[in-house]
Length: 305
Image (cartoon, rainbow, N blue to C red; front, side, top):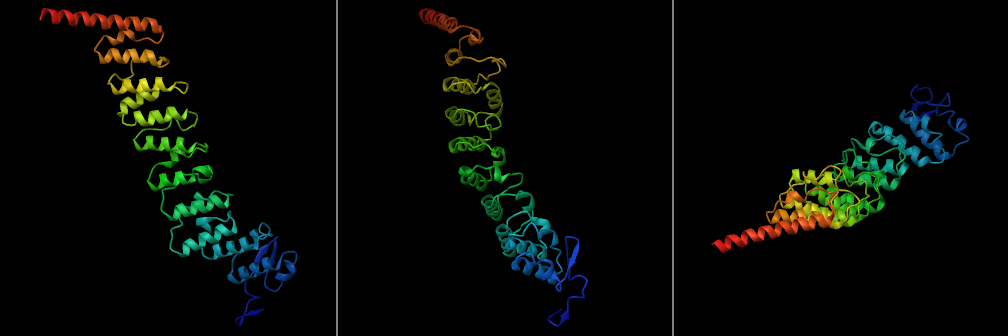
């Protein structure tokens, strides 16, 4: 067979290995008679280009468009960078990005095998915008959070911390992002099981705590705490008391914490109130007794004066 005046049939590289047989232009139609004309045409182009396409013919039997895109991907020397596991449409878009001058390095790792086109398109879009995507599993991001994730990436946030596959409420994710922006670790909350109002309270009131205070608070927060308990723990941190006086397994009621904090503020012997096992009545009586004693002492000093 001649093409452009060249005898192609006899050239060694003008063949394709398929099912253990060698296909050349002369026997192409006969060997692939069970396949569509479109598939045959793509194979013909591969033979003319000297591209080994045989391993893809069967898997693309019903999708000649994808087979053509694989052929062109190989021809343009992009196979190693991209792989061939994506749909024909996505392979075409990657080729277009490459022709437009975009850096496609790393796309093979980013585009997971079998990724849905919707997520693959988002991955390409984010890649072309220059977002830091290393380690990010885009197909794990719930659809309703894609816009929020992109805003975080645009702000150069570490969105990998929230790339857990958990279908957060949007407001929950935003609270996590604000907490991260304040320089706080979100590891404790990324399982998505904390009460939203409690998380928002922590983000709003504890975001400006110093690192030492934040670490102490993290160690003593519990998922079953109510808003008042969490608020009092944060107040204790802000008063400069720290939380080291709370045992690892101790949980105080909000009212108990409130008495301890007020005793500290009024410069009473607040450590007498420590002990999660103490009853609220005992704590209240002790607090009132110390307050009354301080009042008597102060009154005596004023009387003497």
